[in-house]
Length: 191
Image (cartoon, rainbow, N blue to C red):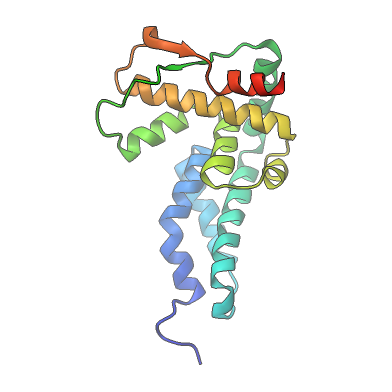
């Protein structure tokens, strides 16, 4: 007999629904598509013993990620090609606010999401998977169908662009930029 103090897997998944929709939205950039992905994932759940609840929660997150990425495979592939070209041509900005610059006011969740969604889809997804979701490089390679070097470059580009987008959204002037951001650091380590 199941203890009434433990949530059922169905309740556990439903409790995560809005968080999973948000994750899928940040990956796809499309709220309607994100709701569909999470709905399909929650419909696919299987009721198991409480022992597996934590594992199922992590599995559900990864399933949402995989399904969300599957829904945007063409834009992801096109974006990955753009990133390869940027890296090969060194045609990307590598400027950041100076280390002494601070956010002038609180950053809202909506401002953060806007700054994140302004990043091209492949680097945004690489950043979300590697930094925010803490997914291993091997799993990210499989999910994004890309090699390690491309994912690392895309993550660095996305970190740089996220900092830039947040700073600009906080009335920072690009005239105050410094060089030597994440991409320069990666290049120095590789040399």
